Amino acid sequence: MDRCIVLVDAGYLLGAAATLLRGDAARSRLSVDHAGLIRQIRDRAETETELPLLRIYWFDGAPDRVPQPEHRRLRVLPRVTVRLGMLTRVAGRVQQKGVDAAMHAQLTELSRHKAASDIVLITGDGDLLPGVMMAKEHGVAMHLWAVQAADGAYNQSEDLVAEADERQLLDRAWLTQVITDPDSAPLEDPVQAAVPEPFAPTEPSGTPQAPCPTPARAPTPGDLARSTPSVALRWSSDSGYVAPDDGVPLLETLTDPRQVWVDREEDLSVSGEPHEVGKIFAARWVERLPHDQVDDLLETLDRECPRIPRSLDGELLRYAARFGTIGNDADISEDHRKQLRAGFWSGVEQSAEALSAPTS
Image (cartoon, rainbow, N blue to C red; front, side):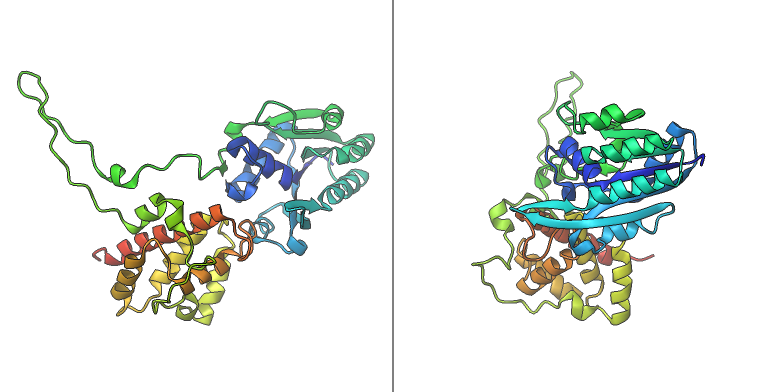
């Protein structure tokens, strides 16, 4: 058949991208535009093969093979089929099980039934070598795409590279159109960033006058959350830290059953990046506060900043645990907790500003 098919090993693609962009393979710390990534893969495959795309198979691991939010978003995109293997923890490390076997089986079946004349593989796994060799025997042209390696070395099986008919590189410029590292840009000091550069007018002689002093703006809750040292960013639910609840209502009590369903649907489009998750949680909480209590509750929250009231903090952790890229509520990393908290304060700040803005 004169068409092409793409098989994507998501663990390889995103893990190698994380290594290139961050220096480690923690793909959960990347921000990925999955729809944009699929669009780029499709365009590149059709351009390279000069054939229309039949389908993109996305192979990934998931705990108990239960689709995570990113998988639910991917599987409803046109021409995308998601195949899941197991995601397990061995000796403290997360590993995929069954993904390479599923890719091998799919490759073998597609080539045997002549489903496409060209197949693109995005993987580095040498276990697929027998499948590639079989596909070539059935007359399929095999294209192998590699993610640019961080140190210039190979991140693919050399035998697999040698067996491919065509080889292409997914370089940093191509990847960063849809995959970014939210932590790559250092944060400015929020107080200093808020103070404009003093204007120094000149005398007729050209000698600058002394700059006029500019009063510093008081940092907002969002500024504090982003700039406060880690010791102050500890979670109110951390072991050893005991504080009374402040009578702050939970999001659960502010949300009716119909809105729960709407929230779940909206969560399908959330990337799972911790800062974004915290921001969304905060925005929903502020928007649903009783109108006659909004000012008092936000004032209570502001007095406690950067600590989140204990019960609300625990609810934020439970909400974040829905996203497989973050973890479960008992195993959320310290780094992700800080990002969640910073996102929470950012969401509170933006929502509070929106409520106080004059309406036309």
